[in-house]
Image 1: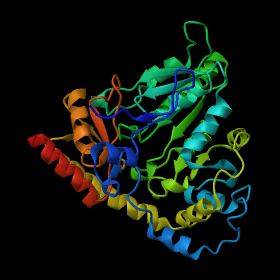
Image 2 (image 1 turned 135 degrees about the vertical axis):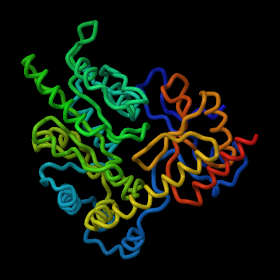
Image 3 (image 1 turned 180 degrees about the vertical axis):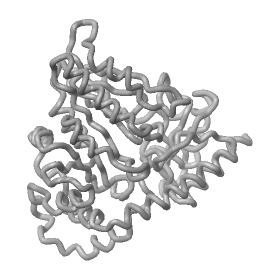
Image 4 (image 1 turned 45 degrees about the vertical axis):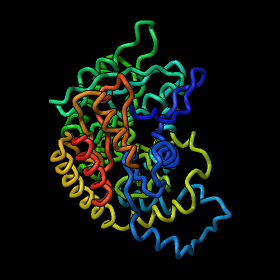
Length: 386
């Protein structure tokens, strides 16, 4: 069996994020050199853009590291507003998209409230809801034959009904497109249809439409942002990040895009100086160069297709993906555990899913570079022969 992911949860504390084991833990457990370990569980890039090293070497910044960054993150906001085509007052900077998710939960979820989570999806949506002492309304997505798309009718129904104990009607809907861990984007028009339906249902009932938080962490790999839908659905918050296509996950830079009144609601909860001067300077520089994300996405997509084909040839079943990761399906949860164990023993860390999860029979693998990906392919071939 694969090792249990590290977690900081306890029966007396709110739900929390579960990590896979650290590099050092894997090295000790399997007696492999720590420097040989490669993480395929984090959906990050194997290396940042070369310009990052150049900026760090120059380090001729106006604000020294001994000071806090400017409170308005002006350079970063200006660069993001220009890149995303939105107003400065429609942007909020956060320490990665995860901080913006946390701010959204604080701003739009009251204790005793409720939020809709179409599952399977990013676990933080449910975790943040529970941490706010709010009810998680899990709505199953459509099946594999429908690419795990949103069930619009089911989400609308859930958004209009209190629970059986007479609790609150859900005031928040968490969405993710492209979705993690399915690797698929919502079909064209699905999110727009959902927003239109939510607005219509709320108007008919004489209540405010729910806030919809749409996580677009992987959107650079999959097409156009749906941020323009905020014009017709005022309670839409769209999240963007520099962790994936821009490959600076370690610097923690993310954004909320929304109408000014929602940005003001979020800003109340933002801590001072959570995004560092280094992150501000490098993030602004990357956003100003339109080639960086485009070239990295093109390279990642090409490697994803090669990696998927090689895994399929080795007898594994990678599912279609429009992101920088692959969801790999096995015949059973037992087979997935055996594959995970085989990878871990070779210093390769996949993302696993707990027993009872819809994808307990799957592993999620980040697309990295050719040499690193080929280690997984070789392991898959060896595991198949064992």
